[in-house]
Structures are given as C-alpha cells and as structure tokens.
Image 1 (cartoon, rainbow, N blue to C red):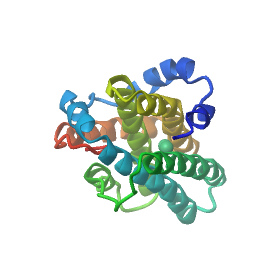
Image 2 (image 1 turned 90 degrees about the horizontal axis):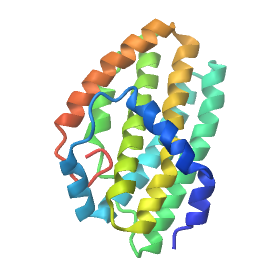
Image 3 (image 1 turned 180 degrees about the vertical axis):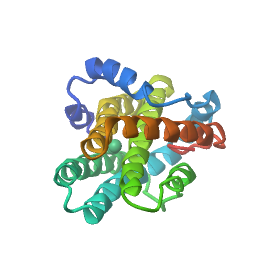
Length: 216
Ligand SMILES: [Fe+2]
Ligand SMILES: [Fe+2]
C-alpha cells in the first residue's frame, strides 16, 4: 500500500498548515472549480491518479527547464533545485500508489488547461520569464485547490488523506514562484500581471469539460 506515513512526512503538520495555505492560494484564484468536476473525478479515480502522476513529473520537468533557460538567476536556480526534488518525490508516491492498487502508469493524456495557460506567456524577455513564473504559480494554486477538494470529497480514505497531505506543499510552491518573481521584477508589475493572468485562468477553468483529470 502507499506509504501514507511517508506521505505525511512531506507535511508533518499538514492540518495546521493547510488552514494557512487555504487562505494563501485563495488570494490569487478568481474562481472556484465547478462542482461538476469533483462529480466526474469520483467516477474514475484511477484516471485522476495517472493524470496526477504526470502533472508531478511535468512540474519537475518545468523546474528543470527554468534552470536551463535562466542559469544566471541564482535565486531561481536554488529554488528550482528544491522544487525538482519535491515534485519528483510526489511523482514517486503517486506512481507507487498506482502500482500498489494494481494499476500501471499509462501514457500522459495531456493537459489542455496548462497548454491554454502557456499560450498566455509573452514571447520576449523580460516579460517571458515573469509570465513563466506566474503561470507556474497559478497552476500550483489550482492544483492545491483541487487537492483540497479531492481530500474533502472522495470516499476512499487512503487517497483522501494522501491528497490532504500534499496541500501545504503545493501552496508552498505557489509562494516560491511568486517570491522569485518579486526578486527580479517590481512588486507592482508582479501584482498586476498576476491579477491579469488569474482572470484568464478563471475563464479557462470555467470552460473546462469537467473530466476526471487533475485540471480537467
Ligand atoms: Fe507536487
Ligand atoms: Fe507543485
């Protein structure tokens, strides 16, 4: 079975910290996920887990890609080291959980939500780096919200507890991306662009088909 003890070890004080993270991520999201999403998610939890595993893997890959693009940005590189480790740790847990339940990983179904957000990234620097950081922040915030919903609604207690254990970590990732953005860009520019991108993210979420995918 999935090592819930290990999952808890990611966030040993998850209950207390979850309350704080809940407030934090709500600061940037402009709309909640639709109730229909959790209804569809519950119909196919295996599909959710497979998609979730790929999301963790892609989060680690995105952190590596940022190091590749901006090797001279010391704070970014150091924060991304930690993020790669954490996301790969999450990937390993979800992968193990899928195997423990007799499943296999299967191919990445793709993430139209993340693809739509990535299209909003401006092409030229310095705007490009800012947008990459803020899009990553929004994806972390939305993931955090969806983990909370899963932890509160799915009847599978082991899985619900696992998703609850990831909440604080993903909220922390949201803050990491915002902190890096503030290090390299004026506070006002970060705030205004995050607000703009959050508006667009809300439109994207409202138009999702509500499929059993992490961002479906
Ligand atoms: Fe993660
Ligand atoms: Fe994350």
